[in-house]
Amino acid sequence: MGLKTAAFKKLYEEQYRVLYRRLLAGGAALDLLDGALASCNSNERADTAKATAEAATLRTTLKTRTEALRKDRTING
Image 1 (cartoon, rainbow, N blue to C red):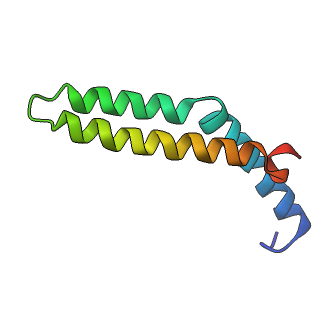
Image 2 (cartoon, rainbow, N blue to C red):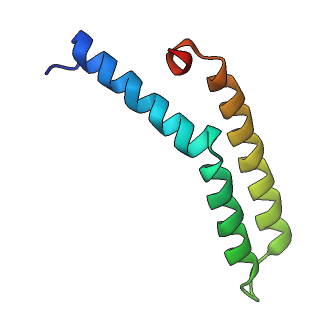
């Protein structure tokens, strides 16, 4: 199956939707971010203010991307 075939495009879009639902719409990416932040902040040498600020930036990016993809035709079929 070549990369420019209709069958590949269909498979790619199906898997893209699965990843979107699992990672973004399902909240797994945000959960992983929260877990990573908690783990980082449990380290006594951590710069918790910096880690929290960077996590907030990533959280905003994830939420923005989730919302944009929610409206995408490929995601909605």
